[in-house]
Image 1 (cartoon, rainbow, N blue to C red):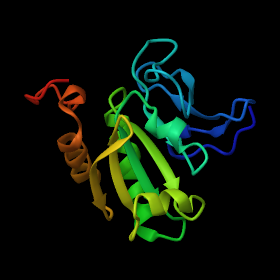
Image 2 (cartoon, rainbow, N blue to C red):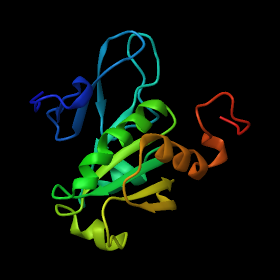
Image 3 (tube, rainbow, N blue to C red):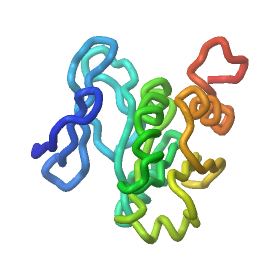
Length: 174
């Protein structure tokens, strides 16, 4: 695997040799390193302890359908741009939400400058623009950066009830 330098949390990105993007994720439960592909059936689990792993992927015009729309989990789409300060500020909060909702949500990041077709399709007029997709259909939309707790609340309110929040204190089904 040719990997780029690790991002926040020790995750590295690369490909699996077949062109499929792969991210390396360390399990918070047992510490084992796992390879998580951008697109796959089901949701990622640790190969050692079977704990759910956060699913964070990047997609563009060419692979958005496979990575985001065909996902078996609800997808939080981050439409962002490298030149956008608020986009860079919200990234750690979005990754935290994905980690907190491991096994229940997939985070897909789309650089609108590299993916103009998706930017037009989702009528992006400001970045960051966040979408929640369920079976490929947008069910919620939000523009602008926010702290992790506000994003977590928005995601939980937006998720279909069959994928409810990970908080066991919640009365919504999980």
